[in-house]
Picture 1 (cartoon, rainbow, N blue to C red):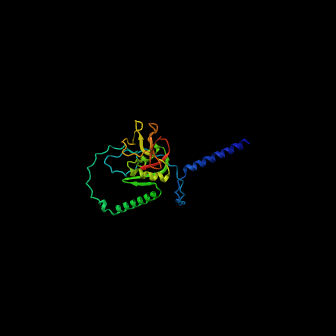
Picture 2: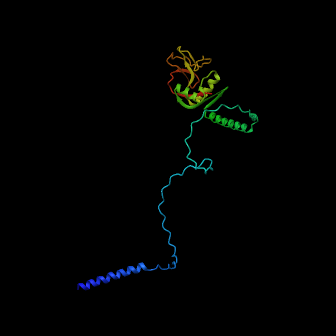
Picture 3: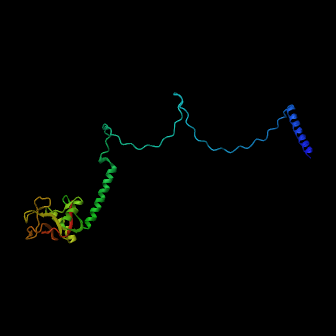
Length: 246
């Protein structure tokens, strides 16, 4: 048994030595013909974008200018500058058309005059106005005290009605009789009891007192007109018809 095993190992050893001898002693063969290229492969997927590289070094001076950059955002409005010197006066323009020759202006004035005439006519029919000499005497039909009457007339460009002669007194009376209301006049008592003057402080140049009037003697500082045209001194806090003159 031992002899057989030893003989088997000897045969295996010799066989392996023979194979090694054959490999070392062989001559290299001739290269075979290259095979055909296979079909091109599909494009691979795009890789991840790399980080931006560092800026390159500045080029030498005198190179060509690059394209203009984009406009920046508008900046804040600056403070106003110092006003400049006043310029010279310009030349006088050509003369315009005289008012008397301006047809359009004349038509407008005629229209205004017509409208005023119509309004005056309506107010006369309602006994709201009277014309005497250069005055227009008018009422709004409301009754207030003396100070309110003065304020109302001043607000519309007139004054409280103030008769300075018989004609003006009659014109006021026409309105007083139409409304059947007493009215205050622009006459007040001065510092001396019983001595009256116009509201502007000038002395009276015309009166139409009722018999035994004025009789308040410092207690009745205003003057009212009755519905017969006569005057009476009265306290200033009564409500009387508002009449103004223009």
